[in-house]
Image 1 (spheres, rainbow, N blue to C red):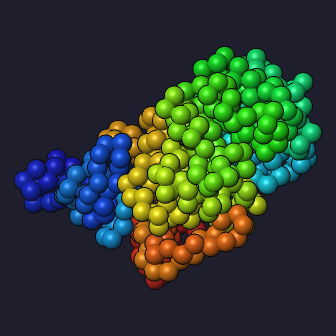
Image 2 (cartoon, protein in one colour):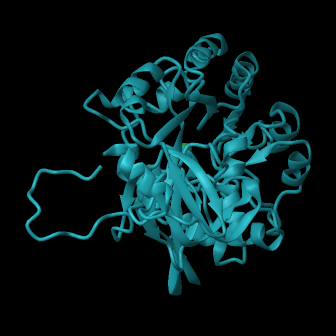
Image 3 (spheres, rainbow, N blue to C red):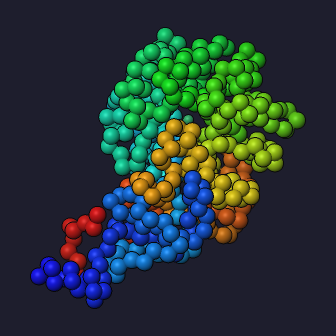
Length: 415
Ligand SMILES: [Zn+2]
């Protein structure tokens, strides 16, 4: 019986069974890692990217997604979020303003979110157990040089707990998910936090992300940080805050930013609820000094403020003339490079099938900064479908879903 069927298939009398799990058709692929930017189909098999081509012929039983009018990009990467959510443990041990990553990331096309130092090297393993290992979203981490991470200002300032060796041990043990070191919110006039974070980065061979704090700008000049303390590949976050002399009194961006970029320091947006002001961002757009990576600094307060979500943050660049390709580059391949994970942020054949299907809406939209002042724009990026390892983890309008069949019994799940 089986051989007769095989003969019919070979003779072209019956269509071959579908070789793909899903085929996204008629979309506009934007995949900067592979210099793709145009109408293309994309096929997924065994959770990996199987083909990307102008036209992919498929058997009649293939699951297809019609992406007409939509953009198909690699799953987005947010390199600055806070997702050590309080899962019932005392607030002093966990970032109490964190989100569970699956509650937020997939709705913005994000398949990889990097926690930016909410946990420190002492409580990282708790974070891993409670959140990282339980999430469908890929969660990576910058580990805070402060032992207990962002668990209250007292712990963040505790230099006795800033131990490069201790952090390096954790980073090596968990190198599958630890991508860097974080220092943040340091309030003393000395360089202890930065120096120890860089020492840990050197020991573990990973970059450091610096939130430079807002105190002691004379005792700790930003020039010293960017030109002497940070290494090429280290990441300066909160680029458009203006609170740390990123902007000079005449309104121009501090030229040291450009000098630091020339020596290889990377700049991250880190929008947050106190680090994105139109006065600074507009100077950045005017001077064409854009962040290397666009990120949210996701936490409860930024979510409820002008940040809102990742697509909203990306839209702020679109409405200022940054091309969708460049916005996608800064949230995929360049983000992957910054965290040393070049296998991510790409639609290369064989890569894990992390895919975002995005829509650019046209209309009148308002965008708030952290002073709650708005700038109007004519575009808004939204997410239709998010696919992680070949499976739909967010599907706003059921693009990848079957039509409801009357009489279908409850309880049966499609995926
Ligand atoms: Zn942050």
